[in-house]
Image (cartoon, rainbow, N blue to C red; front, side):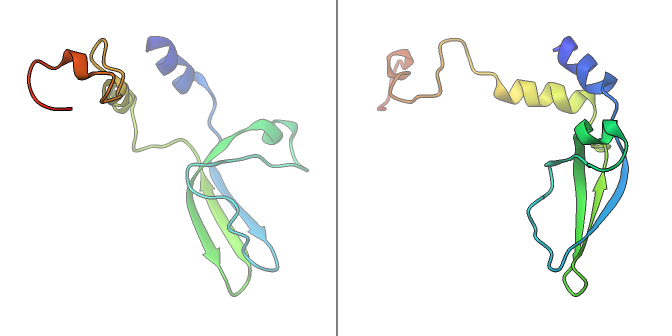
Length: 107
């Protein structure tokens, strides 16, 4: 887990806003996805900036994305997510496979 935290916090995160003007808002990108840009600095092509907010102006076809690291999450949140993903040893999550572990009750 320490390696995951180190990787998450040592990776540079791009932050800012990007506006895209189309004939109509396509809606093909959404929250939680990443955004890469072409036609600018080379590192923007692989920046994987996480979309935190999206605003669409349907009248003009302008979509504005706010990108950056999730400021509302910290190391403790990652630890908690890891805890939620844990299962007791031998528990596969499959109710029928775990029936032999029960001492009483029906499947």
